[in-house]
Length: 279
Image 1 (cartoon, rainbow, N blue to C red):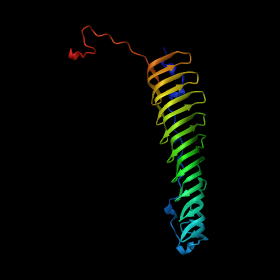
Image 2 (cartoon, one colour):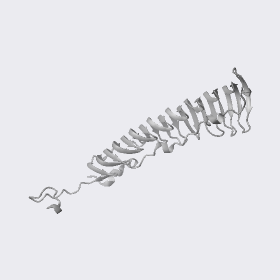
Image 3 (cartoon, rainbow, N blue to C red):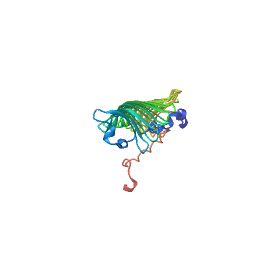
């Protein structure tokens, strides 16, 4: 029979894993909304239907240098914001479109396609020491991509609206890794986690915690198979230590619950489990 302390031989599994989404800094915002690019010069100043190259400055401090046609920015051009940010791209009907480069002084840099003034398509965004390479939709990480964090962690897989969503893999700088399903930024669904010391978990996750059924192995040969709740062995399961001893039964928040004494047999002639008030 195992004592409660035997299960503590695998401490890494008794700690709740961090939620990757919480560790990833918020991505830099997309370029200013389209309304910020509202026309601030007369149509005559911005070229005829065939277009021409021109330079314009506005009282607010913004400036545009590039091609214009029919009173709109049309073709290749660079827009410089009053705060020093620059946007060089192909302009379509007065909005950023096609491929381009958006830079913020001492800040984010985006290289890739635009649609309606937002990051859209396959591009690269560098911000705060982090780098995202992959698909964008309407300014957000959306689709397949890779996010390398400044701290050394990395995620590869599916995104939805800036968050890990779908199948992916998260790699910690420490050597820990998780491969499986994500939902709304958290590990949710079936997945496999492993640690540098040889520990491994394969099973269900809910909101970043082990929840449901799983198979947990320690680096020294320990193993637990059964139910989990809030990250701990909880419910029906079987634990085997590295020396071959094992227990099977009920666990509560990581500890084995020894079975209680057998109930006393009913008195002859008494109904099973009779209520004293009814006899």
